Length: 275
Image (tube, rainbow, N blue to C red; front, side, top):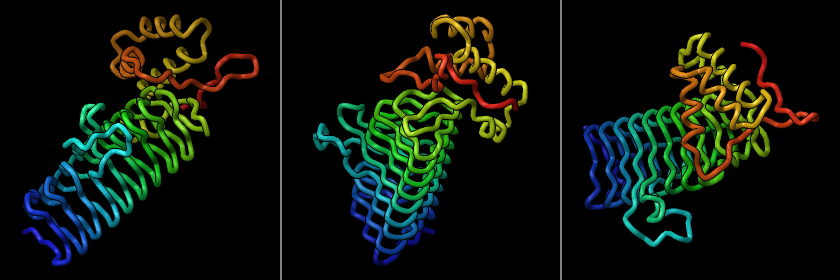
């Protein structure tokens, strides 16, 4: 049974699903779609052409579907789509897409957004992603499935973060981060493989060892990066896990790849210790 607090304001035209709870002082705009079994705890603002998937819980002072923070936005009916079973905590903000960026900001299923985190216009966030407190995306960012963004981290516009990567807290990410990597630092650099994340997802020990070997071959071996990439493709041909790293690199993007820091002698630092 849907329950709407008498202090809430639901605009005519809003679509409210079955068994939805809309708490005190929530405001839902005329173009919003709230899926079945969603819960808006209190003082939630849902604006614009925003669709929220079933089972999502949204906490006080979250603001979803407001216009892009972009001087190029021209007021068009762009959209925000949030997947099912999300957990959106206090003060989270998510903006609509912009006309020049495809018109859509998209968030996957099962995502956890902690206090004060932000998804900017035209971002694509995958499934089962976690944003720690005040993690922030610039516009047009692509976040793969199962990514973890540490608290107070910030991802520059047009950056890609690959599946299963982890960004450490208080890190500024200026370049693309390959799948399964761990990146950290004021200007983020690669610091090895996100082994903890891979273990939690049930990857086998042998798979993690292959990913680590591929990482070392890409960033610690001799020769140019192009030569190292060719060697990894040859060695790990047909490997479905390492193949995700290779495909990510081959696809390319607007930003350069994030690399490990350089040693004093000019070679890339070793990745993390043995499993």
